[in-house]
Amino acid sequence: MYKKWVMHRIIFVNYLAILLLGSVSVFGQNFYKVTYMQDTMYTFNTSAFYDTSFRKPDSVPDGKWIIFNKDSLPIYLFKTYHNCIHGEFSEYWDGILRSKGAYRMDSLWTFRFNPMDRRFRDSTWLYHGGLIWSTTLNKFVDFEYAFDFTNNTYYPNGVRKYERREPHIEVWYYPSGTMKAMTAVYDSDRDEITVEQSFDTIGNLSRIVTIRRTSMIKNKVYISGIFISSDTVEYSGTWKTKEIVDDNKHVTTIYYGNVGQEIDRERHKKKKSKNSFGW
Image (cartoon, rainbow, N blue to C red; front, side, top):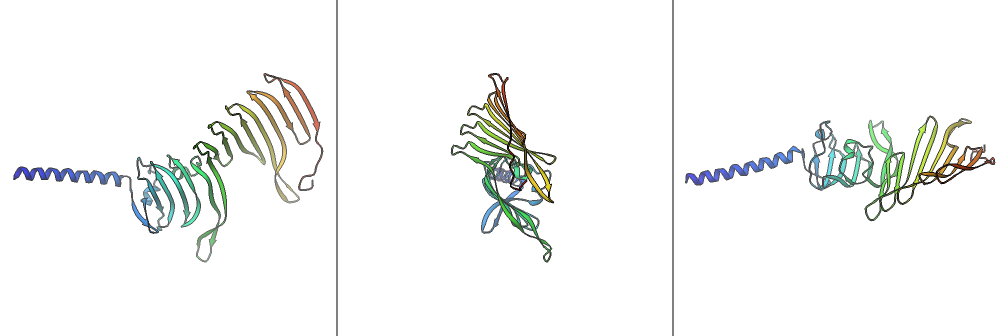
């Protein structure tokens, strides 16, 4: 009888230990299930999620997630798959939709740690901007406008087709994954400089176009994007083959030899033409 009691006791203790270990594993990650709008989702404790000590969990269940603010209004709705943010994603301000789109296998959970990182955002996103403040209610009530923004697109085989690395850098790819073109826009004082690079199917540089525009005020009207100059260089892999320089007064065409040496140059004066502002 005593041996049987000891055996049951050992089994009970082992079972209890397993339950406790399971609880530590789940609650150590600080997430649990909730029901919102008649849908069951996972969530993190809000204060823990926004604490500076929060780290991306080592493992979470696949499924729908919701993050609330202190007033129990949604801040984020998203999905996880293989511990990545994957699928539909929505962000809310005071319960009002701010942005909506999708992520593709975001292993870094960038929305939590670096909201400006767009590498994992998939296809076109909807954004709302322009806060509308109610003086009667003394709170934010809506947005003034909405706009679309394409972050990344993919070929049917899953290879990235288009990528926006940051708001001012765009990259296109061939179906093989080789870079096809890159456009970058830089600001220098009031000038805007656009650099467009093109590559062949094996990654060799084929063309660079640099365009410089400026902003100015004329007749108390602020005008942006006034053309200043452009420089278009064609390449054969590494070496220049042809270059066209447009300084808004003259167009100069330069021809190069097999190893990039200049072999000929032509220069023509541009014809004057009024722009859309009549000057």
